[in-house]
Image (cartoon, rainbow, N blue to C red; front, side, top):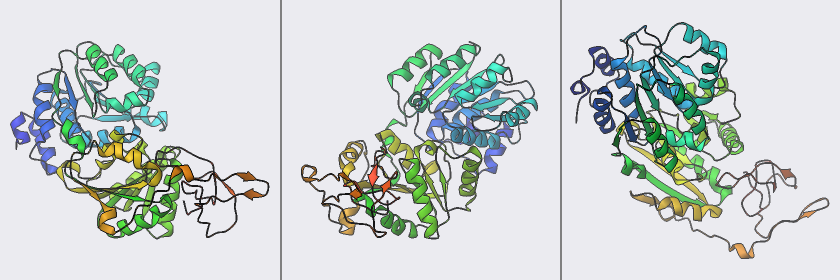
Length: 436
């Protein structure tokens, strides 16, 4: 293993790394840091938890001069990831005198203007809010010498490519630029061709997208049985747990029922205010909450080293999301576990994801002796609306609360909202009524 002191970093940076117990560099850091220090552009295909934040942050800190204005810009797709990058960079910059400001939507503009007025050398920003600052003149890019696009594929998925191009067109042509992405779709490659100069490409982490180092397992069960199994699994965990759901409604319900079961759980989902999201993350990071229930909006911005288990309560909508979710455990080379709940209606989607997993995958149905009985969809009876109520499906199991009422709850494992007939918690995929 290569130690950080072998990479030519300043004593102030090495001291900060030593404070955090970091001595040996990860492969992405060994590969990228010397190239970035030589002022050559970099493209890195790196999965979450591989250490890419340190790869670009340490390189910038090595070359930035304190009190000379904004010299580095890091663009991230989500506020959670932007905040995470800022916190990491501040730790690395502890003894350098270099200051970092975080700029993202959802936070008051006044707070960010105050931070910028105090003088910073590094800005970590989400695209939309950065453009707001550029248009009002509170951020200028004329002295920027280092630009980083982190999680470029996510920015593509979120529709930020036009914003990125707008920002890069305002930046000086003489700069060192790095682009990091878990995948390299055509649009990202085109972006790199247009804005990066003779970049050095590092794809050394591409194979790790299989989830290497994480004990992965799955359980095929009825949707209504998920919560009972969830409780059973998390009772056995000593560390922290992250539970990923596909919709904000499901996220709220799971967190609510965990509270009822006396678990210390917090939630993060898209409709929450920024203040509440920050409160939830602060409680989870500090260890005051053992369980975080989240939608995929948070999957790229959670970096908590004590996460022992990730549970996919719902199947993600694409295979790459699966790998980003489970990458929240086994951070920085540690060991971790991931369990995926597969409802009967999502077996086909899960099979597509399974093909991308190149490590051992444990079938919990066999271990736990749970028989899979997937109904024939051709024989399924769809509930029909009637005056005064609904007609029950042949697969309905009834409800503990009794009575029929219309519900906004419920979604399948792909996160598609559906109108159901059942109690407020939702219904199973065959029209029956359940806790969910």
